[in-house]
Length: 468
Image (cartoon, rainbow, N blue to C red):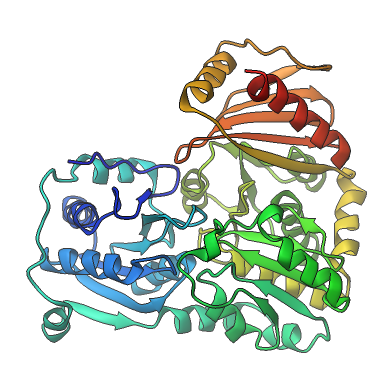
């Protein structure tokens, strides 16, 4: 029987290989038992994104949990991960389940757990679910029709719930009538319907359902968004563009020239808007791979900044228990005060759009405001496919402090919170971290300009991988 383990953000596996209805049923059974063991409300909200088999896996989960005595609220059609989190919060269910593999390649699907506060279930609770996953496959005895009839299952419109929540939280009239032109790339993901509903005249791309994502992993990085970037460049009248990943909890952004604006800059812009323009306060919590410039901005604004392991669940745990202004990851997952403690790519984009609409300033002008405080910088990362043996050897070398130089870059200090961040000079660092779900070594770097960032990345890749 397959051993099922949750990674940094849920359980993910290849469809029809390990991600099967049998294994989903096992995890659903454990989820139901966990709700009972922890004396949580015996109810769950369930939904799926655009991936292959989403409806089948969501209905499998619903049938197993309802047969176990858990009241099911089931979303019809595609929903984003933030919609499930919001639903768990608004409906006060014991948990939420979203069938998604987020940004992973199209061959994957996954199972994420959400809690009633509206964010990822914390690691200690996930471990409890893992520990009770049965070795036998439970059989669902009731059909969806029977469950509807006996009131153990109820369909719920999470998209409208989310729409109403946005309308109550943003100046949507200002956004829709500000005279600026906005563009959106759904990457064939779950944000496609809600974004067009919120901003009907938005210029949109890849806003149809395609479970294969046309062969492209739906991760909002520039290398995956070249068509969108060119669209903005050629249109000339688009002021701001954004993209979301498969389940719409991450953001990638573009300025009016079609230049990619990475998540570090998005985090800084959001802090700047919330603090300086909206007068909001609170701690800033960032994952280990986020720009050092966030600490610098927090120092300038007198805000506490805390660094966590990578995985939004670690940020969420702090957001649930403390007064947090913003929690953010390098990968584009960001949560802000006034919403649920959940990454939400659509919400973050709307916040930036509102910032532009209310100030009448371009994104480039707003970025310059941030640079006036912290100075300019740039960033990039390489995701390098490597054999596990080499990946493990590199990680072991990092743990044993083998690397003291990379080419002509001398290591000044090393941080080891989650992965290994090598500080090279006052403005430059490179970080190494092995993916927990793929045969990939991630190499991150930040420096004062893009040319130096690429030189650092190329040097490290050449020394550790190409010459291995």
